Image 1 (spheres, helix red, strand yellow):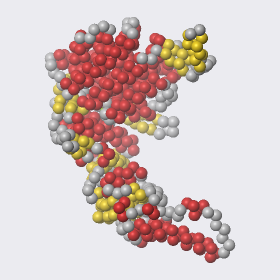
Image 2 (tube, helix red, strand yellow):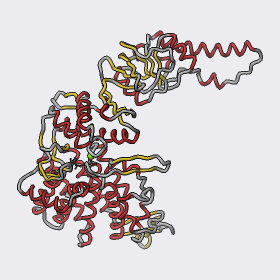
Image 3 (cartoon, protein in one colour):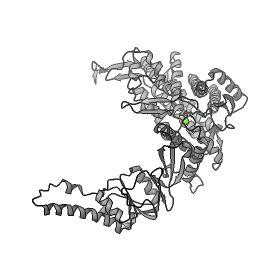
Image 4 (cartoon, helix red, strand yellow):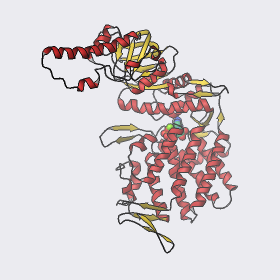
Length: 555
Ligand code: ADP
Ligand code: MG
């Protein structure tokens, strides 16, 4: 496509297979795409939300309830839909939880914006109103939030439980939430201003299949899920000097590549001797530094293994890069990438112990910097979903510990927020007022969907919730376990304020981004057939790359 000026008018020359959609059509198109994405994850919201089974092109299966995971795996190739997926990713990065909420609100904002468009309200007014509402919402959330004592373990456990529920952690939620709170506690330091600073870098998550989630544990130090390279090596070492090596203990490549033409057996022997000597030198160098344990990211030659065993050195090969990086913190070592240049200063110190049952090493550093959360689950699918839930909960607890502000969950915050935004709308003049009201309605999607996913009538629940809030019950929410409208804060359904602020912010930013577009110029084909497909997106059928397919019939 090229642009030319003709008689002072810009003229756009488009190639034959490119397409252009403008104004209301463009807005319709975008809103439908964005809503389809939002609808795909809605049914997973809350503790009673359903899971999705995602099968990728290689046939590998993920079963999850996690918004961002679902959207990432869906492999959607529609530009508008991708903007909404970015909401989930931003939410994940900034808050670690609340991805489904953010995406669902974004979808609902756009749905309501569509109604405003139909009433001939210009998108500019809607965008401005949404922006004002989001700003007000952040203020209100801060006002509604409860400041907690960040040492209050019970409350921290509750935030962890609230975040994990629905993600395969139910049965063991008490045990797991305690581990999560302990884990965050062990990587939290108070800075000079008396603020808590949580450094999750020092927290490592490892997963093991075979045993139940109830046997998950928090360990000082790191884990290496490997065997010693040689049977005659020690399997444990206390007060050990530890070498972290990112260099193979093998014959140098160049020597292997050299072509040797052997004219007599003596020459071959000489060549082998040279290789042997090279390996021996390497091991001697390691031994001379006083090394007791080597964790090597690369390979270790058989002969080198033998020499190491003879020196009484415990060696592990092909250790994971991430493990080495974590161990570096745990034992206070440098990762050596050139063995020859290794010095005693590069070594770390600690205890290495062997867990024979799980066939892994525990590595505990002398200063005990860093902890490992070892998650167990019966199968890969179970443990993977558990890890996603625990990851969210860790972020939630970390946020709560550093920020100290929490909210009542189960839709309580959303109902209160909506009601306050409606009051605020009264003070807004012009068409923006309608947009602020539309924003308030959109936020209420959360309790509505929570009710729906719990199998309750969403209208009844909403009526109950609203009337409780009108009576001044700021914490009235839906308890999905009992199905009752009650004080969810008291019931232990507690969420961090920061995640909610972020959800509202990113949802409105994404909606505004979509609304600003009045012209779509596509190099390829925008439409194919199948108009009703969009509405089925919640069922995920044909989602992979097929989003474009749902846009048909619109042009
Ligand atoms: P997200 O990806 O947005 O975090 P979740 O599926 O984790 O989505 O659901 C979070 C929502 O579930 C929050 O609104 C939270 O308040 C709500 N929730 C969590 N536990 C309960 C519960 N026991 N009863 C009702 N709502 C709950
Ligand atoms: Mg969540």
